[in-house]
Length: 454
Image 1 (cartoon, rainbow, N blue to C red):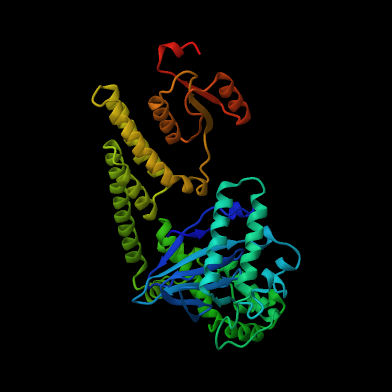
Image 2 (cartoon, rainbow, N blue to C red):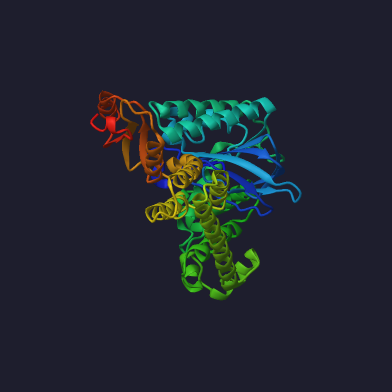
């Protein structure tokens, strides 16, 4: 996964876009639902389909989908063509107000859902695709840097993106009759009830209908009309998807998971799980753990290679390995602490024991810096903030900078923000910079004995 804007539930309250990646979709279509966020998905390459509420829409490079909150959907590639998608998720209420944020209204998201309240689908021209990509790039840059008035820039780009897509939207789901927003609102409310109460074993279509003040038959008919599914099948799919996640992420027993997912009969649970996922719960968990362990072992090998190549000063290889570790799902902290900093720490010990000298330390530091440059965009996305701010420079009258540069790289590796003032720096410049930039530390480098008193 590489190019996907994500808003976590905690960060959503701040309306903050925090991360970007791109998905390479294989042949398995994993459906997902988000009850709070609108999804914008741009197809960057390949061909396949987008499954929305059980209906497949063919897609290829240049297509764009916008999915409203609560709509179950997924993406699937053709067998001979890997589908690459770029996604943006955002909460409408965090960025817009009035008619633009009024779900079901004609102006909701600048009318992008005017053809269908279920999904907006458009085939873009090459020029429009480039425009959308450029907007996503601006949003990523502004959201990661958070400079003055960045939210205003992001809002303007979101608005422009929605307006641009709305001009191309037409016939969102083919062979599906146009429906009014009120009807979809009822189905949407039902889906929210299921997502929130699927763990209640007494949940039925009848008691949801009573909650929504509509008849059971009308609700069943509308749900079938929109999704192509019976309610009972939809409820089972939500429950079994939850069970699958719990088997992957917890050590709960099958009995405990069954109960948490709102099911009663263990034999039926085993049968339904195996029918849906091709393996019994026990076998599925074993395979998941095996794959996880294999993945962790592969990651550790990459991390160790980062450390070893850093010690050899191989900057290019370190950069490639850091990117590979990111692509394999390693956390920024793990790459930084167990790869880059550990390798530099080993070099430091060797230098202390006279096993290596300044040139070797310097090339290793440069290799570490090359890796850090790859990590930097992901640091801000992962919420890693600088632990402090330092200004550093070589004092007035001295032009030597090897030691200064080495210390700078080491400090950056430890998570400090470093302002490099260069060489031949006047005392007043150190003080002025420290005050203006709110630096906690001032570092003065000197090699010539004549400058020691400066």
